[in-house]
Length: 91
Image (cartoon, rainbow, N blue to C red):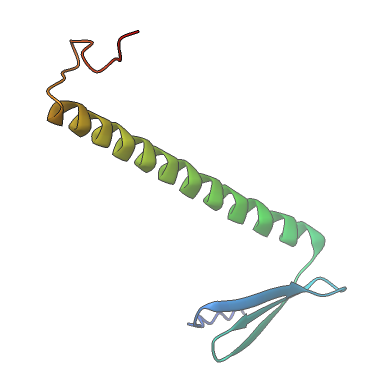
């Protein structure tokens, strides 16, 4: 028989892994203790790292788009266009 329960918890305050690989997560209103092993910790780390990598890539792409849009708007406000080289300073 498999029993599952979903626990809604507040924000994470801290995370600790003790010497017997018990994952302890302190949240608003309590503590969650999870007995685990080395392989499970590695899988958890891989999932978290992959998620962070995707978020960083999305943030970098959003920033690139924002900077390109701002540069284009700045060039247009100065009367420049992409087909002219009027925005380049003369030597």
